[in-house]
Image (cartoon, rainbow, N blue to C red):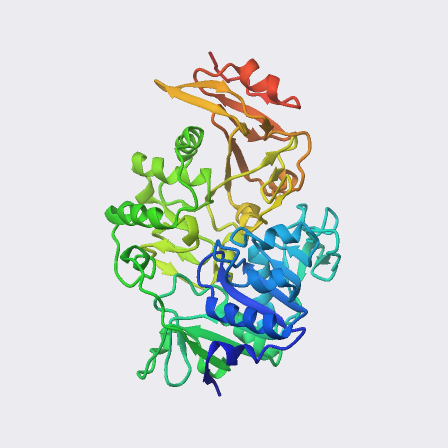
Length: 510
C-alpha cells in the first residue's frame, strides 16, 4: 500500500548500493525534488552511496547545479548506464575524468531491456548495435578507462542469426514523475509531455522486490479513468506531492490537453523556442542542407528528424507543402504533430498519439520509418558515421542507432567541415568563402555510430547531405552524386577529402 510522504522521507527508502531507474527524457519529466532530497541526505550523511543509475533517454535539467548532477558530482554514484548525456552538463565531463563507471547503450535497447526485466526476462535481444561501437567485437559500451562491465552487451547467436543481448543490473528503485495520484494511488500523466518507460520501470522494480517512488503535481479524490492510468496504485510505494510552478501557455501546448491544428504548429513552436532554445544563431550552411534534404520527403512518409541541423528540414518541408502530408515521430513515444526542440526535446506540439517509449522503438527497430534525418560528427571512407563522441567530449548515442538501423532511407545532414566555415548563398549559387579547420570527412571515424556495412546488408538507401554537395552510400564507399551550383568540384570537394570517392558519371557540374 502506498504512503504519501515528503521528498526527504521518500528518499529514506533508498539504501546503499541500490539500482535506480529514472524515467526522464533528457531535460523533461525529471522528478527534480526527489533528486534534490537525495542530494541533501547524501551531503549530510554520506548515504545513500554506491548507487547505480539507469536511464534510457538520459536525465538532467541543462543545469549542473540541480537534479541528480549534484549527488553524482559529490560521489554518491558508482555506475551510470545511460542512452544520452546531453542534458547533464557536469556528469558528461566527469565521465571522461574516470570519476565513476559509465556506459552508453542505444536508447531503445535500454528501454527494451527494462521491459524485458519487467516480464521476468533477464535481457533483450536486438540487431541494433551490431557492428557499431557498442558491439563487443568493436569497442563495447564502456565510455571511460574504468568501465569494463562485459555483462551489459553480448554477441549471441539464435537460430543461426547474430544478435546483441542487452542485460541491465536488477532495478530496485524507480524514480518517476507523474501528474496526479488518485485516492487509490493510481498515477496519471495527463499534464506530462510523455510517459516514457514509466510502467515498465515500475513493474521491473516490483518484480525485483524494490521501491517505487512517484512525484506528482497533485492528489485528487476522484478516481482516474482506467484508460488514463499509466501506473496502477498497487505498484506504488511512495507518493510525493510537489505543487508545480506556473508555466507559460506555450508549455501547455505540449501536454495534449487541447487540439492544435497544423496551421498553428509554427506559432506554438516559435513561442516555445523563445523560452527553451539552448542557442539561437542564423545558420546559413544549415539552411542550405535542410532545403536540399527536405526534397527527399514523400507524401505519407513516417519520419524521424534529429536535433541540430536536421531540424531545418521541417522549415523547408513546410515551405514545400509536404510537412502536413507526412507523419513525424519522436523517440519519447510521440506520433504526429510537430516535435519540440531545445530544452523540451522529446515533447510534441499537437501529437496524434503518445505511447510508451518501448513501443516507439518496436516501430523503429523493425524498419517502420520510411525516412530519417540525422546529424553527424564524422564520416569515413566506408560511409560509417560517428555521431556520439567528439574530441574531448561525449554526448552519447541516444536513439540514433535505433532510428538508423533499419529505416528505408537515412539522410545524414552535416557541414563538409566546421570551426570557421563561412558560406553564402547568392541567387541559388553556393559561395565557399572559407573552409573550417575541423574536417568532417576522415579516413577513420573515432567511433562507429552508424555501420555502412550493416546498411548495405539491409538494402538501405543512405545519403550524406552537406552545404556544397551530396554523397550516397555505394557498394564500396561514398559516391558523389550532386554538386551544387557555384561549387568547384575539385577545389571545394575532392581536394579536401582524405580519400578518393566514386563520382556519378551522370553528374553535371559547372
